[in-house]
Length: 637
Image (cartoon, rainbow, N blue to C red; front, side):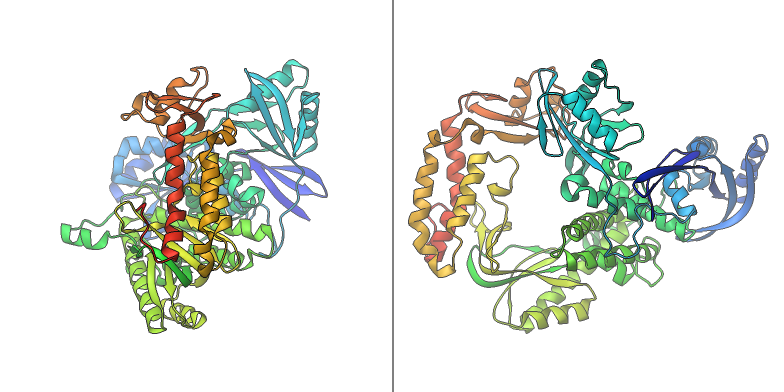
């Protein structure tokens, strides 16, 4: 069986085909075209310009999502597409509209030849097992101290072992967060172990208000290189990257370092090419103008209402599966058809993706491969909705985004009505999830909601008890709760255990506190003494290692851009200037003296008062649960 595992190039495509344990490379000349639409006068002027070149062109009609356009199709090499498009823009501005100029050349080649990366005959089939080496070098003082290769630590013969691992494997997953892989490759060359490689500069990017850092990427000749810092790799491993490559027709290396939103654009472009729909280079349909009344009516987002603080029993959490993508599919929402319809472009291309995700979600508890595919497609679908409201998205339009959230609000209201008619009380709701209490028939309720709304809904969790935690003002919080599920596991949101910047001592306490409260609701008051003893133990800070006080902090700007001098700022200030720090990176340190803003990466001392305060704050959710279970008003709140 032959499997296409990679492709490189632009004007000349190098296709990597894996067969019987070997990689065979085939080469193809790659040609493409762009389409330019406009009025007859401007097209005639463009024609005159083209006559002075060697480019082949023809007049023809093609269609975008809005309909047919008369224009000129220009045939050229992929490497020249953006150059010609830029020249036309400089000469004609927005009088001519350009299509299909900036589509990834490999994606376009794969679609035109009806080829697929990592092709499988059915969705249940596993992935090809390619020889893979995971290499994690660790450095100190600018030198490599040891390397971990596929879980084995090597302190001696490091260069020889790394060289062998690279030579014997097809996929190289490398750790390069602080450029340690760069250092390793350079040291190997000095010691006679030459690896043909290229390095690409690190970068930071912002997505949904969060900064991310992508370390320096490495390309090794004849190898597929994956940066272990890749978001998808961390979340779903190679399985997730292979699934993205499969659905987007982009090489696995490419999907490992681009943002999920960029992958969404690639999937949209792939489906447009398959359906012979033009892809615009620039957008001019961001939003229909609205008066203030219509604007505030349309732009209201999802439904969120806060629960009453307390501990409750017999609670169900129901969840719409990919609600917003489901609305796009079932209601036919697309930029060219805001009111909905059966032929809407976004609806057509998302249907297969949504069905694929729902299949893997139903199978997620069977095999890890299905769970990882499910997680990857879930992220992709989430971004597909977000991109409908992104003004630069090829097929985005704010009006479509608002229409989708509007339908979502109606669906949640309908789900609440059906739940109440079936004997449940709606306790809490967040966009696409509801928490219900009562003794109604949950299976019947879910069936009725699906039949009425057309959106898949599942029972996410069934709780023995769940505590909705209050905010500091006493009002219930929409995203802070602790729930013991009937399978004996906890689901927690909004407490320190879930926060990256909480030190290990806090997380250890809260995990042990959960273990103590793993009991029926009636038994909770009797666990008070155990909880108090645990708190006393943790208040003796000398019982813990200095590393238990280390705090991880995300960097979201350069040091000179910090307006408020917080812990992150002072830690940055104390880091050796030789260490390059970029927004999106995560650094760690220990607070030595909060009052005098002394925070350092390494220390034998810590601010006792500061960490005691953090501990007492982490006690509050558990004190609240004990107090509420005994029908007492929690003093701490």
